[in-house]
Image: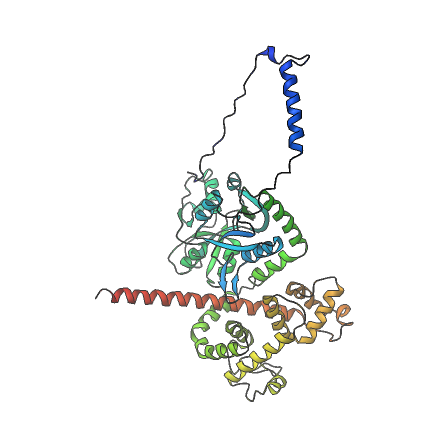
Length: 494
């Protein structure tokens, strides 16, 4: 049964006049009177002030956005409020010169119910634009595409196709696009069955599969890609749908707002800003190495506690997120304080002898000394990186300079300008840096040849490790709180 309320349509009845009252010919006296009075009315209204356009948003000066607290939409990270959807609506609010107000919905059901009663200007929470939803809601332009994936844990029983799915009962989000798709398929595969929930997000369902508390669910491809870095045993059995668009639901009473969103997103996309945003949140998730991530997760538990106090200490001193320092150190040495490369760089932060001398590091194999030196050097690069980058891009460019040298960053920026690209964007440098290995480009640059693909991969892997680390820390914190709650509850019985 569909959840949608019944549509209320006005019954319009045509009032028929006797044929003698509207037969063609010369206008009757009543008709002439009506025409004269109508003319006076038009003259009167033409002298009035034009009607004011309807308000752009529910609250003047404020853009109220309903979203969900999930990794692909909105969350509080190390740098404050963040998330793909959040950054997108923040850019819109800035363009419209409106203050952004975020409201959190706890489920898709809550989101749809709120928008059915016009409780926000926009709903931006990874919502798929489906034919069924379009019957009841007003959508903005498409900005992303996803596929629905049937997800299981590696090694567990799972279906290989839709006919075999009839032997399973996946748990999925209530009133989701997944439920709509399964209803469509049930016409052809009548034994299909599933359960729905409003108590969990898709991310939580994926974690339950990883912990073997659930056998099967359905998730959008972008959500699965992000979560596989935290739960590497997750697998996609098969795609339940073709590519589907994500789009915002817009308050049906805000027609002017909808028009402005279409215009703004077109400009935002043509200027490359949408691609930059996708790169920021999804550019590094393709780097998936099952064995590597398994080892990394294990070392978070076994090795990190030894070095964490120093990452935290020097992160505070040099104003760098300690998780970024830790991720960077793992990329350098896998947290091995005795690591040595064939080129002579050594230690947990893999410092060159020249850099160590400049920073006053006497023993590169001393982990605290190495972490201090690595943090200090990264801070110097952050302060010296030219341009006007946003916060995340600033970190990325500094890390690339750590890997390839600041001189090649200068060259890449110059080359970007020559190619008509924006040098103040990491997405641009990510495209341009690999060109530094081609003679037709590096011959005319000051610092010459560089294996430019290496800093690009380096930055992506550091970001990947940092995201995984912060997720694991979050899970550990939740586990600790749960355990503390159990102890407190147990103690209260006596």
